[in-house]
Image (cartoon, rainbow, N blue to C red; front, side):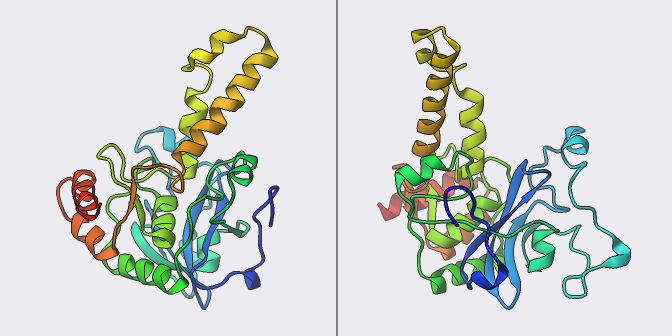
Length: 256
């Protein structure tokens, strides 16, 4: 592994590792926690539509997604295409024909910024494998709330399992690296007043790259200040409430 790629072989991963695989021609990555014996616990919206919008746009987005052949079901998992929430799958079903990648923790700021694509690493430190597996198993039984592409997605799930960290503000419970990258890209240059400092193409590119990097860095779970440890039992208790965001924020406030 390194700056260029986090790709690994199956015999290189261990129980408690945060793994991922790219989907839809590298449009996004699906994340999960490897639990050993060829099994992965992961959070899904169902039918592989982790970035679904619930609109007709999904037909375009998922045109290149893996299809589910009911006549050729996995002998270990069966048909999981209709399942959503936190599920356990074999490694083959999780990868869905894609390559295997290992998410990195406790990286330096320089390394983080060198990985221009979000959703591959974080400055946050990982807890012990036992803690990671406990959170993942507990959430498999009790759920992780409603899937949301920006606030509560598969990467948020895996990062929480690894670190126990959640964003405590009522605006967002979680902000994955992928989501942060998309937001940073959408707001770079166009919304930045720094764009008026230069009119040259090179200058605009430099300003844009700088703003993109800063936006990604300040959104990382290992940097932002509105993050706190939440024990998994407390999190699950909040999931059943009407407003999970405000409930988690209240519980986190009690821990501060």
